[in-house]
Amino acid sequence: MNKWNCLIVDDEPIALEILASYCQQLSSLKVLGLCGNALEAREIMQTQTVDILFIDINMPILNGLAFIKTLKRAPQVIFTTAYKEYAVDAFDLSACDYLLKPFSLDRFILAVDKATERLQASTPPISVTKPQPLENYFFLRADGKIYKVLVDDVLYAEANGNYTKIVTSQGVLSPVMTFTSASALLPAEKFIQSHRSFIVNKSKMTHIEGNRVFIGEIELPIGSNYRERFLNDIGL
Image 1 (cartoon, rainbow, N blue to C red):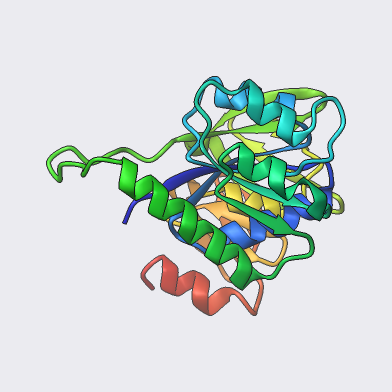
Image 2 (cartoon, rainbow, N blue to C red):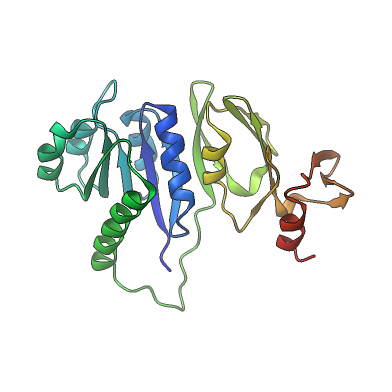
């Protein structure tokens, strides 16, 4: 199965969270980042290949329609907006789909299916002797900066109110991002949820003792509702 890189752009945190949670339901999608405006998205798109772009229209600085016009080679674009009057303009820009907020998961899946059909039609088959490596990093906005975070450097993520604490081997980042949105950035094959407020990098775990998992001297809880799934996921 192909893995498609997607980017989410919206100035409403709740909209970002909903889209991130929807993307998390589809194993074919990899979320490269969550952006609060088009210029943040532009920075990421200059360094990474984006296959599907979910973007709002009515945003500060540069609206979604104007941003798409600046792209020399646009990805598959799915507009997500509360304003139906922009639909004609959107499809004039060869948009893949136009989702009116609030939209359901099933409507979202239909839009993604349409985008992936276009991508598959334009993508030559990949030789099985040369598998494509998974991206090993993502971008994160925190403290007024955009950080490139290596997946293997992340020790764990912790829910912290309206923020999520991302603890890496280099330090701690606290983006204004819900725990659900942060979870969407961490690949399921490398991370495991030990508690409703904690996601742990499996490769960094050193030992388990009772209802606690350790990363060296760092002690994290294993919730009773997560324990069985946690142990199954590590082969116990």
